[in-house]
Image: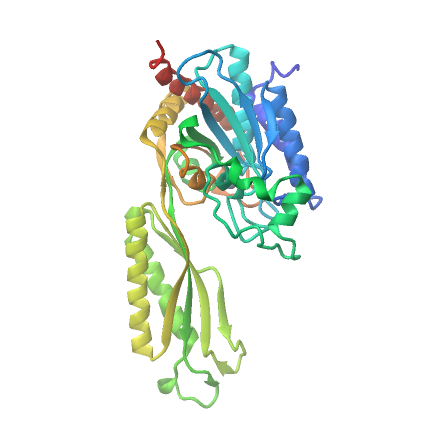
Length: 424
Ligand SMILES: [Zn+2]
């Protein structure tokens, strides 16, 4: 290997560029779970893990695991610190989302190995295959498998072409019947760390390369419906109409108001999908269905905002004589970062950048939401240009990646110091 003279940031960029060439569509980056592209990316990541001195295996869900054993005997030498992120992408994706976290982990291991610092615990790098949930109507399959949070009844879910997760796993070389056996036992792990691009503008606007994550937002998805009365656009007088779309417009404005009122809890609400029926220019809409994505920094704030929205919808229903409904599709509780890992990440960032990092909530979902079922989680955010993500324009400075990898190494050292105290 003659990489020694290149900076960690340059090396990370070269690896990210190599992964970005593995795609389903030339000229675009699209790499979905359990596809040929995923297999090719997993193979390359496995090769890098091996080169960094790790023993490598693929688990039943297609996650790549690279293990660096502890450097010395002690009370924690059989336990492992997990570091991971994902190698799947959205359609027409950016190249840093997920992959940066996997590559940062691999380069951090290489760095520690080259420094010949004997660690009191093992480190395991995880490259998950399904964080984005694009191919199947399910997310976090890899991290839910490792954390034992997968649940049943997902193997028969299908992609757009009718392929089940079971069949896709078999074709990939995974094992649908062994998923439950992959769950780690709580006492064997020391925590889960993830480096990820922020995917938002806060660090960029603050002029800071790195931040420490406080929590991954509490999230709810809801399906709303308003049933009014369809009618002739030319003959029904305005005063007697029960226009479902006008009612929906009022509800959407109320949703915005509620989210803004809960801004202190980082509440954000989005209506991103709407369908008006019958959907004809000369018919008063009789039925409207729309989605609501609601997130906040605490479960209480999210459920308070949801209750308030329910109340506001009911008011609109009464005032306009329309039938309203709000159905919960799914709710994910907040995943709070453990104070000890937050402290370690924070201290490490301060060591490499010279200043105290900002603390941010993650509005986006991450593998940590599944891993928190197994162990303490900690996350570091890296600045991305203008906060643009899930977009080919996604961009991260090499210098920032360099700092991120050095801060990850420093985080591992801080945690190692804590665990050395337990040695005799
Ligand atoms: Zn991601």
